[in-house]
Image 1 (tube, rainbow, N blue to C red):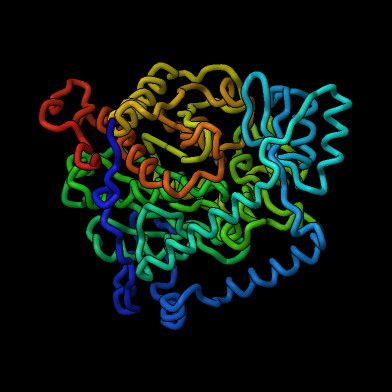
Image 2: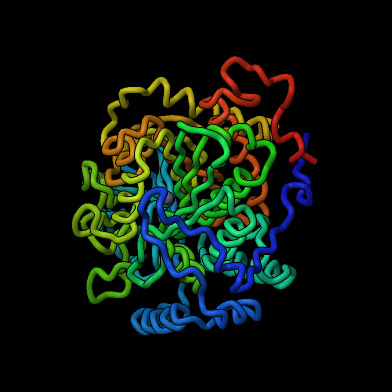
Length: 491
Ligand SMILES: [Zn+2]
């Protein structure tokens, strides 16, 4: 039996920077010719953020959008969605049709049943379609919004207790916190950390890339690309990505590996969607970006993880109302275009990982076919190293399932991992579905955040340690007796 000692997992990081300090932030200029951005925001924005959430231009825009959305939703705004259990696998033709038409949002499935979120206005329609297909269903969670409200209350309580502008991993952080933290990390580790903006979203936000490398050690180095937050509601993904970014930059556990690696982090690949998911209880379960697909407010957004240009369209919806809407064409969205272009420019990426939730699985390509990829043995072996690291940190409590994403989750194309593997020839490309296995789904309790970030960091350390032959997971076990890695995280 073991438990995490929260005080020891991390020191909360105060990320407050003055405008003068922000002027020293190391924005990328030459290393990959990526576009740069304004070096210092108006100080007014920052002083407002100390007092509370700022009423920035974007914030005002959100207020307008929200009012507009509720106007469209009308009186149904206070009636929440339900989580249903349908006695059929996710690939059943009736379930698939309901999802493609945007009537249900599939949360997960097993060979015997599927869990779907059903909006109030769609309940009778969905029940009718299931009856017609002779599929039994039951209501598993009658009031999903109540769970969201609970989460919000908890977060507000945490925020009240926290110093302003302080990063930690006991709660979920909004986009403003994450960007402030990135800037702080850049400022305080300026020799190691650079930032760039790789895209500007429809609503004017940046998609940021944070590069971490030690310039005092010679290359060539293994290049590792970590993508977080491409699906808005999967809040544990940016939490894991920011934690890992922090550990790689500052932790002695990572120092030797950092000498031979070069990291590219995208903590929030879908900033418009992520910001929206924090804006109200009803927006909490938003998945896509916020593209305008037509006049209806309900049918906004493109699934950015169905929009990459590799076998685009297989297992993705052409209906803008669907949660898996693939977009009008491949790379129709500024986020995917900018990320793809940046990955092209970085070149020769060795490992690509995109963090999602939920499911506790390490998935390798392909998503568009059930056929195994060429180097399936190597992909599987490296995935097992991730699992080993997680098991070590969790005392065996947490374990990941490993497999191809097509065979395990059903066919879906246009995902970033398939594109990295197939179009960019990244030899080790994965989607990691973070905890849990379905009891809380997308609404992972905040009390789980510290455990998940620490375990994932340990998994990554073992995986990259194996790849670079450094540390406790080195292939020849050279350092095995010297360090068990992450022992200090346990209480
Ligand atoms: Zn996802």
